[in-house]
Length: 190
Ligand SMILES: Cc1cc2nc3c(=O)[nH]c(=O)nc-3n(C[C@H](O)[C@H](O)[C@H](O)COP(=O)(O)O)c2cc1C
Image 1 (cartoon, helix red, strand yellow):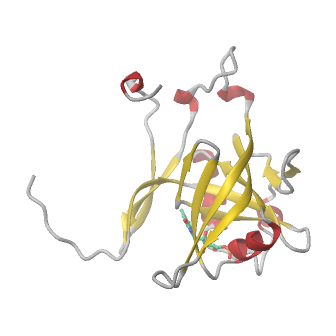
Image 2 (cartoon, rainbow, N blue to C red):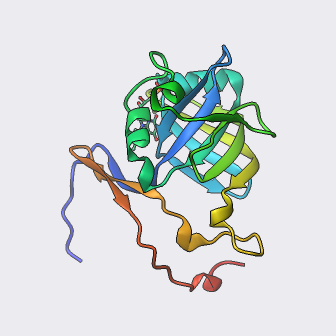
């Protein structure tokens, strides 16, 4: 395949978007939008701009929740990704409901279908990337809406509706996934 070398300063090749919720140092619930992440087993890695309100509070309070929104929550995704918690309580501004997690000291966004409860374990700040804070966190619990679970309590993955972030340094956009899925994961999953 013939390729052209490009000079993008950023490239988002389809990252799931989610809402990170936490209680700030004063105990006030707040939210930020994130797309830089990966997860393996009971670990999740997230990437933040170093100056954001959420990351600087999470560094102090440690606990947070990853809430997975779907395409019905575009306004919330966008608002939490442009307003700063320094100036606004995003739960109140968006009329979202914080419900305290039973396993971490952080609020779950009641309106999202999936909540992943996390506790900070590592903060990685490297002079090579002076504007970025990466964190690792331990997953302490997961809560999934009943409508996403089958009779045996397994995830109905066709019903997940993640919103993906795509684009380059000039233009970014949201994409949705198809409901259709392929069942060939046995080849590489145990
Ligand atoms: C779709 C989307 C994805 C984003 N992903 C990230 C991200 O991965 N890391 C990050 O630091 N900021 C990300 N942002 C930007 C922050 O959400 C934004 O700077 C926000 O205003 C920070 O809020 P805070 O100051 O309350 O933390 C994203 C924004 C949008 C709209």
